[in-house]
Amino acid sequence: MLIRLSPDAASTDLPSDITPKHAYLNRRALLQHSLGLGLLTGMGVAWSQTGPSPTVVPGKLPALASKRSALENALAVDVPTAYTYASTYNNYYEFGTDKSEPARNAHTLKTKPWTLEIEGLVKKPMRLGLEEVMKLGAMEERIYRMRCVEGWSMVIPWIGFSLSTLVKHVDPLGSAKFIEFVTLADPKTMPNVGSRVLDWPYLEGLRMDEAMHPLTLLTFGMYGEILPNQNGAPIRLNVPWKYGFKNAKSIVKIRFTDKQPATAWNKAAANEYGFYSNVNPSVDHPRWSQATERRIGEDGLFNKKRKTLMFNGYEAQVASLYSGMDLGKNF
Amino acid sequence: MNVRKRLLSPWAKPLLMLLLALPAVWLIYAAFNDLLGANPAEALIRQTGDWTLRGLCVVLAITPLREITGTPALLRFRRTLGVGTFIYACLHMLCYAWFDQGLALEDIWRDILKRPFIWLGFGALLAMLPLALTSFNAAIRWMGVKRWQTLHRLVYATAVLAVLHFFWMRAGKNDFTEVLVYAAVLGILLAWRVRSLIATR
Image 1 (cartoon, each protein chain N blue to C red):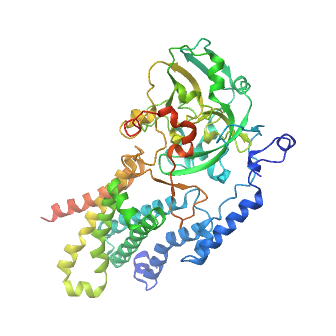
Image 2: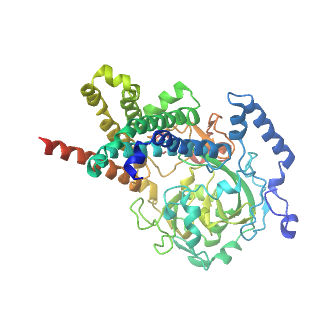
Image 3: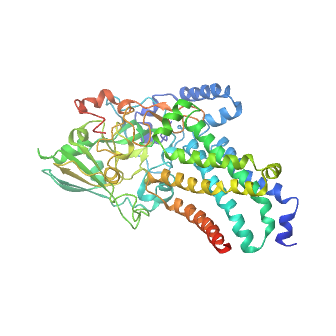
């Protein structure tokens, strides 16, 4: 399955075991057959799904043990995206704006030693080494849909624990209403930090209740291993009901504030990227529709794009955070 | 045997056509063999667009090259290159309409209302259409050389529209490096023509 059969992995209950391998291989074969009947028989088969199988073990980085998450809707039933795709098709502008560049350039990122600073409106501001941060909570594997604002999506088995675990640990003051995430901006190791594409460092932010939502994941690994550099190693965020750019990568500082933080994309184009950036098929980006998405590795060339779900399919869990808000205005 | 003689060889044109077909052959091969990465639709759309821009650069370089190097034989390749470029532009549009929009006219209409940079690309293609339709010898005879040449100056409009199309598309990412390369090449080629026009007056 997704994770190598190393002794510690074998002893863990893996969410990737939910769909037995033969079941989704059958599903695939079916897909190929139905497309084969299409206009161009050979092309249909060849172009529908010949990509790397999601069952291939990455085996590239150190393993990170975890337990299957028990949280409601934390294990998407969707077919996970192949590791090859999830680790070579990335938006990580510090390493280049083309989606193939992070995988090529991010080897320069130094993730050891790594320090996470926690400051602002908290009772216990602190500086923690990566290992200390990782010990704060029990590692869980969660399979999340990830919807990019550009109109494509993936399904990724992440490893980490709820951000709320860390928030509780540092004990925020009552006046803390927002959390700002500051990410690494090192011109020596990140070739594109000198460019004027965005204002560096890349900043993101969440409202306190969003940060405390159990689905908000402080992430250290994916596909049973530690995060590859191009996916935001060694610490990143995953807020599955928001567009992918809200998931700050390579976080160095978490700051608790009483004001809504400025975020990188909001500063670059406030009319296009709001603070909330919740996935919403009925609120279009000013320059393109958000009604549909292309699932990477699964939707072949001849498939129509699939419909995007409200809050990326996490509506039942998160809609209450925004009750009474005009989501068209607070996009 | 020198370069000029080789250019006149009966094999030169078929060889050029073969060369022009190579990127398309590669893209089809890559699509069949899953070599286009995570998002093959996007890769096909972008790469056919890139090849169209490159084709425009080459086709517009013929006249300056011919005059600067004194190689009139180059002229025999201009129309072949032009038609080749037009084919890539058509493939570009087809890839968009098919792989991005699933050939659904209603979706395409909604999409181009949202993304006006597509209009510029469509405009560039439309400006190429009469040129492609009159690219055979008989058309020159029917129209007369003068009128044919006047019509074919539309290629300048295509070049400008194509670069603007690319610029607007990249504006979203705030990344203009590649756009500037094409704009510079096409700008120099157009400026050369303006200069020689002024010089002949």
